[in-house]
Image 1 (cartoon, rainbow, N blue to C red):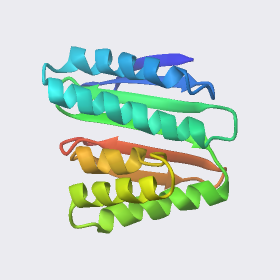
Image 2: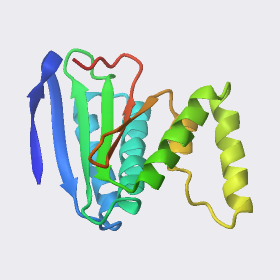
Image 3: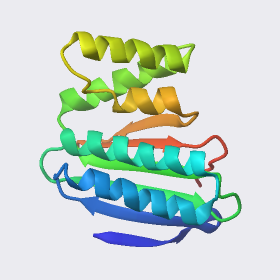
Image 4: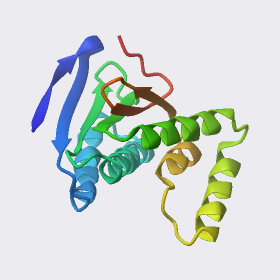
Length: 167
């Protein structure tokens, strides 16, 4: 299901429910790129926001309970360099706790790039490049990652650009 509209602060928002099909993630990344390209001509920012949408959605689909995930992308018309990307999915309490720990660990790191490179080294030592999506967002962007864990098992992870304000 695709919904969209204008929210607070002259915000343009799209919510997209994606079935638990990893093949859709790359297609959604292209969609996010086009969406943010219409908001700003800042190509590096557009690329980052599309990458963030890809990584968050890939993470949400891989760790959902099978019902898929919801992706929300938004930008403001007042300042197109402001962007917001989030995913919501139902996940086990263990997976939700692991995400909270990972984001807390990232927040405590003093150097984003060093954290990311250490995560890459750790993933390769463990036998593969998996599990790097949140670390990549943290290491390659200046976006803020937040996590909301609700009582019904829904996990929401959001990434926001520095100037983003949610009302």
